[in-house]
Length: 290
Image 1 (cartoon, rainbow, N blue to C red):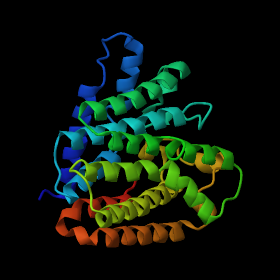
Image 2 (cartoon, helix red, strand yellow):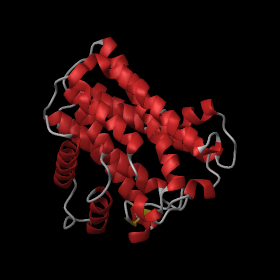
Image 3 (cartoon, one colour):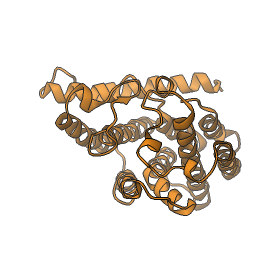
Image 4 (spheres, rainbow, N blue to C red):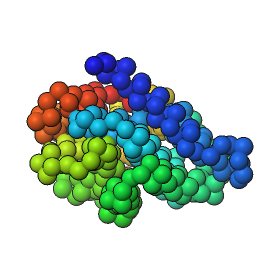
């Protein structure tokens, strides 16, 4: 089995190629919109969610065209969310993945349409790969008001307010965690139906990893610089956003992230060696520097 660094590069390259094939060519009308879609979706990002799709597929012995389509579809939903999050009416950010955000490089109207089009493209990819209605509904729910969009709404409504841990985690289970859960389940379900116990184990893993990812995002936002992050550092604190660091110190937050990952690893222990990649991703999440 390839080492994690090599496997990561392979998944990133495969996802990049799948996205490049799926997205309309920049020469196709409307050229500006298609160019902007490719601008935000290609050539950057850690591709953590596609990695989770492939790792979960590996955990159940699946590896097929649907796995690849699910990985690319989840990434398209993620990129659409980033494009909209960066808009002046949301987080009003100028930098994403080390380059100007879509509305800065193009304009606000184009950025809005880019997000809309990427979301549509995600479901088109799943449908064309033969995903059943249940898988398409799974991603739709994760992206909607009971998932990512709902979490963003809570985040906006909570700006300037002190949240307790339960309130903060409710927000992040939806805003960040819903798409991570969808990535894990789509990967596993690309191999067919799951026995209830195995599905529950993967769901618990995803919940813990999703929260750990957000904890470390908050830590890195406070500790790392803009060049390292590829986005504006310290933005959450400046905007009065509720974060883990409003409830605990950086040391405590790092310890909490490690606890969450330990819990995640326990959940996937029954998968044995097949769950190795999921474990490696969870450890990467708490050790990453960007």
